Structure formats: C-alpha cells, structure tokens
Figure (cartoon, rainbow, N blue to C red):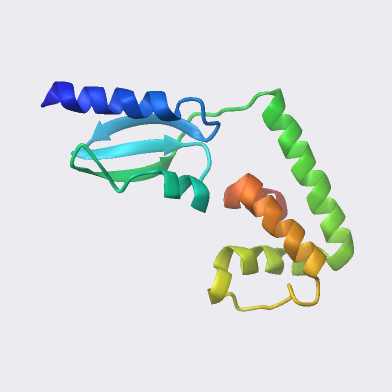
Length: 139
C-alpha cells in the first residue's frame, strides 16, 4: 500500500511540477496536502477531491517563489491597478475587486458604472488571483 501511495504522489508531482502555481504534495495526518503558490477557480478545478482514497486539501505554500518573471508580473499588476485607480478612485476600485471576488454575493454594484474597470479587474483577478491584488490594493 505504501508503494502505491508513493507512486501516486510521484505521478501527481510529475504531472503538475511544471505549473507555476504548484509547489509540493505530501501526506499529513492521513490527508493529501497540495501546496500551491496561488489559487484560482481554474487551478482548483484541475485538482482532485481525493487521491489514493484520501481527502485532498489545498494549502498555500510557505516557500517563496520569486524570480525576475514574478517581479515583472508584479510591476505589471501595480501599473495596471494604478491606471484603473485613476479612472474610478481607490475606494471604488476596491469595491469592484470585491464584486468580482464575491460574485453573486457582492454588496455593491459599481461594475455597471465602470464596465472598463470591472472587465480589466476581472482579467487581473483571473491572472494574479485574490492574494496578490488584495496585497496591492490594501498596501
């Protein structure tokens, strides 16, 4: 049984190791833990609920993955957020960010008044994920 689990984890690791969001996979307390650098709906849809008969949990990794490409992405994100902030202001930009994050459960509706900002923010959200944008908006 141990060899089957080990082979399954190795197979999973080989399948996802080249994705920029994947960090590691391990078994802890009888559960499979997949460590990721970032999460999105697309990423979560790629991951199984169970692996080798064990529940799969997704956690952010504590490892830091930063290279020049990541720094370039961060600069691009900051520049785009600055551009959007000039259109609608900081407070409304944050509200639109939460509208996109909360979906049908959102409490504001500035996206109707600022469709360009909303569309741009949705693209950024899909590309960078919640945490990176939140850190930039809140910082």
